[in-house]
Length: 254
Ligand SMILES: [Zn+2]
Image (cartoon, rainbow, N blue to C red; front, top):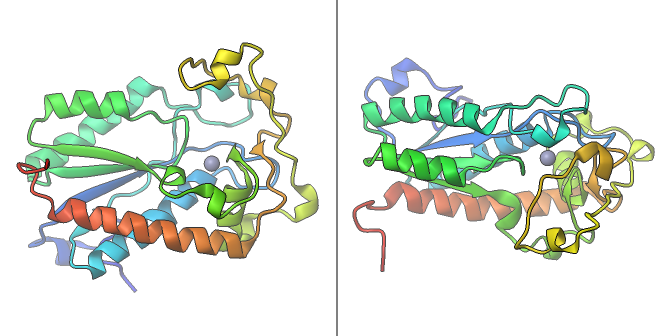
């Protein structure tokens, strides 16, 4: 069935007279995810999460439209990991500027970026584009922070971890290697302790901190955990999208 809120599926017949309230741009990455998950893990998660969240918003009476997922993200720290494809932050700004230009010209003045990859940092881009396109209301969200992961998963992690493995077991089990192939996702921390606190930051050289490219032990992952997290996070995201659809951007504060 053609989903009317997915741009890649809908058609000119439907869109000729259509007017959406909100564009959603999912942005992922193409990169190694431990030994066992596909390079498109972030894109697959972004596709499924935004589609389901948009469906929830649509059913509530919102008019969102999901744009096709951008498959390459910032992978500057993985330059020596085979076929991790890097887009520089300045390239992301150029791509985003062109997309915003289209939306702005055509009067679709609300855009939310769905960030499916930790290396993508949208805050400076959103600030700059908001300044250049004053009619646009641009925001972004990132799903792992939407819920308390501790209520769903036992092991902490941020890359190809228990959460991502569980989600992929739920969404695309056909693309997950058998359990005996999973690496431990062990990772090293900076010797300089301040980098482990929130106030100092430096990019990690991925190949030096993780043997299998994972950060976080995936071994307690399950399809059931993935399904439960997926359902709850898409409900929450769907409500957020609905609120954005209906928001009066001239009256945002209380
Ligand atoms: Zn990922």
